[in-house]
Length: 429
Image: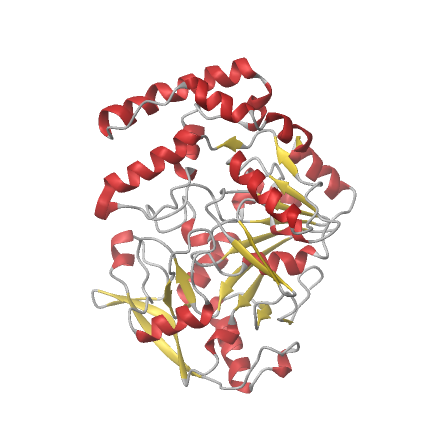
C-alpha cells in the first residue's frame, strides 16, 4: 500500500486540510512532518467547521492514527488546548502519537519571536509570533528542547539554562525586556509531562511498521512550497522544509517508501505575510476574491493577499516536489467572472521569463504576463463528476493542467467534505 505525501503548491492556505481529510478516510495514518501551530487547516464536516493548527487533519477521521513527527515544533499548551477543544466536540484524540524527537516551543521562543518582529519594523518577515522560528533556530544551534527531555527533569533544567544564557542577554540588553528564569520555564514544561507521556514513541519506527504491514500512510505538509526555508521566497518563508523532501526528514520515513506526491493549489492564489507576489491584486477584484473565498488566516485571522493563478509557481512546485498529482481547490470561488486571467510568464526589465527568475530581486520585480480564459456563471457546488462542470470551467481546469505540467486529479467545488470532483483516484490512479 502507498505512502503519500501531500504538500501545498503555492504560499499556503490552499485547502490541504480538506484534501487530507478526503484522503484520510481511506488511509490508516496521517502524519504532520513540519511546522508548528503557525499553520491552520480548516475542514468542514457536515454542519461542523474545524480549525486545526498543530494536530494532523486525519484526527477528524475515525480509525485513523494521527502522528506528529520529529520535524514538527510543538507548543504543549496549544497541543492540549486543541485536544481539549476537539474532545469537547466529540472527536476521539486517544490514538495520537507524538515523536520523542520533536522539538518544543517554550514561552521564551514566543517572546523572542514577537519582540524581534516588532524590532524589524518595515523589514519584518510577517511571522505569526508563535515562536516557530526561534524554536527551529535553537534546534539548528543545538540548544533546543525535545519532547523526550520532559521526562528527565535534570536534563531539561540544564538545557533550559543553556538556552536562556543567550536569550536573556538578547531580551534584556537589546529589547529592554525582563530576564526569564529557568525555574518558571521548567515548571511550566514539566506540567505537561504526564499528559504527554502516553502519546510519545519512536514515530519513525511505528510508521515503518505500518508500511511493512501494508497500511496506507499520508504525510501532510504544513505551509507550502513557496514558504519552504530552502525553496521558497526567502527570507519571507517559514522555518522548516514544507516541500516533499521534508516528509522524509520530518518523519523518519526513507525516500524509497514514498509512492505518490500530491500538491494542492487554489484555482487562484493567495499568501499571508510579507514578500513578493507577482499576481497580487490590490484593487476591488482582489477584495472580491478575498470576500468570496473567505480569505482570512485560520491561525491569525489576517486578511490574505489575493491574486490570479500563477502557472510558473505551479510548474516550480511540480518540479521541486516531484508532484504526481495536483488537487485544485476553490474553483467555485471563480464562478461569475466573465474572464479569468492566468499568469503564464513574467516580464523582468523587458526580459520574458517562463520559469521563476533566478534571483529574489528579479522575482520581486516580476510583472505577470496573462492569458485570459472564458468564465462561467453556473453554480458548480453540486458537481461531482467532471462532466457536471460547465464547458468553460472544464476548459479552465484542463488549461491549468497543461500550464502546470501535472495532472489535476481532483477539483474542489465547495467547502464541505463531499464537494469535490475526482478525476483520478489518488490512491490507485
